Length: 461
Image (tube, rainbow, N blue to C red; front, side, top):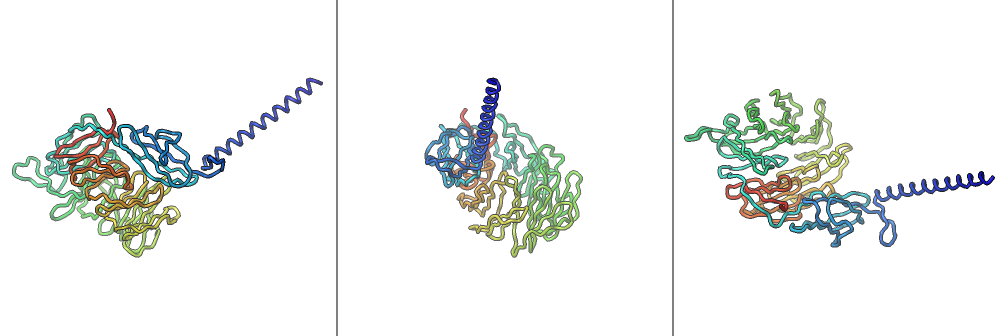
């Protein structure tokens, strides 16, 4: 009998303990779910919904301050729950300059700061290459290659992601029509004006638009195997108004001629029949085209015959497409009005009036921002916060020093800005304005000065 009672008591204790464990696990799951959703208990023991901040920096290991205080986490490359509303984030690191931004934390959402860059105050500088004969240059998307251009037909390719960059010669004598033989010229002279140079994402081809006295020609330069380069204008005996690289390896292009959009296949040297007529502006993602005509914005999946009208318009418009997180967006610029739509349901996300009519529009890295400018005036749409920032470089000599930072050169002074115009810093003097500036592998800053390609170390050695 005593054994039976003890067994019953033991069984009851097991049931009670397991029930408590189940309830404890359930409570923990509920608490974790609430924390993930942004709920937290404040200092007054009140439940409030908060957001999360994720901070990264280059270099890593910068100290983080929130609203002037150092929170329990001291270094970047981490996450922190913050109350909703505005917070000033400041990053500092010994030997480097500082970085700061005021952000707005939303309830239950993640705010990412993964692009802040701090610059070493005392940087070693060295001369890399004598570029006295070079007239201009272009940098690859991965910022590992730089092609030096001059007024001869022998150009120079440098791998700048190397301790000791070695030059490679590329002969373009038979590639461009914009060349001529001259007295004393071994390989001839390049007499064209380069209007644009677009690299493919594989960092192996450059699409050049070149203008000479009488015409414009398009050339696809294969920097890896120059013998495979193609003069597109000559190949198809056609004057194209615009050409864009359609895939990562530049095997396929999209061309616009007299308002007619075609697809060009480079390996087969074939041009398609007209895909769409009456095109004013166009862009694409994956295999779908989005374009503007006189009266509408439409889309067309390659292989389909009939475009789908997305939106009626009343004036000429420029159109761009981009993907941010997992959402596709369409950007329409009519005059100085910017409209943003989600592609799937064409829901309008934002309409804003710009301070100017943009001359150029750039989709930022990962679709995280859209930059529009006219001269030195810039407007940036930050997709993370869905806000527009207006700023001015003070100079029309500008470019992108990395994926998130712009630069300008004014009277020889090199300045850098975050993509939203914040954190303006001056880095160097006597910098050539007609050459690009770039950062490679987060450790070297390259720029041109007095005909020399110079390099500064961005990290302590």
